[in-house]
Amino acid sequence: MLEIKEIYMSYNKNNILNGVSLSADYGTCIGLIGTNGAGKSTLLSIIAGVIKPVSGDIILDDKNFSSNPSDLRKLTGYVTQDNPLIPELTAMDNLRLWTPYSKKEILNRLTKSPLSYLGVDKFINLTVKKMSGGMKKRLALASVLLNNPKVLLLDEPFTALDIPARYDILEYIKYFRENGGLVICASHEEAIFNFCDKVYLLNNGTLTDTHEISDGLSYLDILRKSNEK
Amino acid sequence: MKNNSMFFRLIKTDLRRCMKLFPQLFIAALLFMTAAFFIIKYSTEIMYENTDFSRLDIAIYINDDSEYDIMGFSLVQEMESYQNSVNLIMVNSEDECLRMLEAGNVYASIIVPDGFIRDFMNGTNTPIRIIFNRNNTFEEYLINDLFLYSAVPLGTEQAGVYTINDICVKYNIDDEINHSMQVQLDTEYLTKVLLRQELFSTNSFDELASHSLNETLVSSFIIFILFLMSFILMQFLKESSPSYMMQLKLKGIGKVRFALSKTISVSVSLYSVLLVILAALSFTELKAGFSSLIYMIPAVFIISCVIVIFSLLIKNSATANLTIFIITAIMIYLAGGILPIEQLPAFIGRIYEYNPMTFLIKYVSYSLYPIG
Image (tube, rainbow over all chains, first blue to last red; front, top):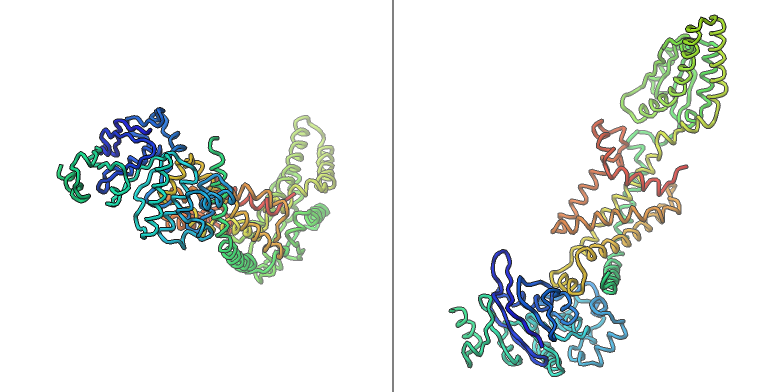
């Protein structure tokens, strides 16, 4: 179980997160919505252990990581909004950088495990600069998932994706969740309501369960309503 | 060191990225090397209006044909340092000396005054006149240096003569004995001490100018070409998106290890470029020794470090390249890597001593063309 308690974060005296708390069990998918600059990526970075919050606790499996958040990096997989891929190298070369496996092992995992949903093996020898946006996103996701994270953090996973790519990625997220993984997904997309068990609105540095704002409202209405507050 | 596995994977990936740039690097290096080769080949002609480094003709007129003067002249002619660098032409008159100088047949004329050696022995300084046909040439510096080095042993002998004279005067020793002792010292000095090859080899031409102009130019151009490779390598050095950096951080790779991996990859790339340059040089008379393959490793690493530091400090690729180009060119110039330091204004000489590029050029010169 992941528990986030009273997280505070500020940049240049601007408070980004004001006592954010949430808890999530394994086998669930949590959605984060909010306007640009609301702090969604900051919250994901804190959960991933990339940045240390000013104060607050991050507890995963009853272990508090607030004093040493870098240990969280081994347990989480963070797929950032922009891909971390090296354009002049092939998909295989990129995967060999981000995972400790040999070529053979990588191919094996990509074709036989549920990672085959992503279809990366079909363009394994293609250089990244020749790939479409969807291919890059699939590859970025595969580079994280090959390391078997317990918690998958996704920042805008559907940006610039065509419908088949969106479908394949959603299928994998479902599989990951059903097999005991925890997914936290930050997105602008309305689709987030369809596949997430719980959706939180991040506004003015605080987190609110969208059900508490008003059940049954459209995504746009929720955002409008939150901005009025 | 934690997470070594990821660090080695990063180095391997960086090397793989650099290898993709090898064709561009090699072509650029060969183009630069070809241009440099022609500059080096014709540098002597461009700078000195002369096509070779043959010995310099110098006219000498000895006013007195005393035994000592002739012996002194013969000794100077036999000195290895003079044999390597000048061709002394004995002429019959002071006028002939000056005519040859005016006609440009000789670089300098030496006029030895009447009784020079005699005066030298009895402590009277009658200077030799040295007249150059033009001012501030490299040859003038060379000849001056040569005479300066010769003056040192002669001055030592003069000190011996003075000492004998002073002792004889102090203890009222007979003039005849005084003279006899001075003659004996002169004879011993001229016939034994100055003839010792060890002394002459110590004052050899090689020590006045450690490497030839061409060797220094090759070293400078190699350094310059390696620095210019930054124009190609910068695309590798600068292409690191924020998400890439974040993923590296997630894998435990900080800025130090990131920079170290880049430096190793750039070093390997530059060393490969160096191999191409040395292979091309091996077809010319300026080929470097095999030992340079090892000795050049530290030089290549230093150049790589500088390139990586500039790439990290300057955000824009074009600005980083331009900065490296301008700073390197100026520093090589101030280190006497393009024109010999003797031909540059005097104030540059002071900068030269503290210019790190001076040491790098010297190190590369000694690595490529070991002396001794």
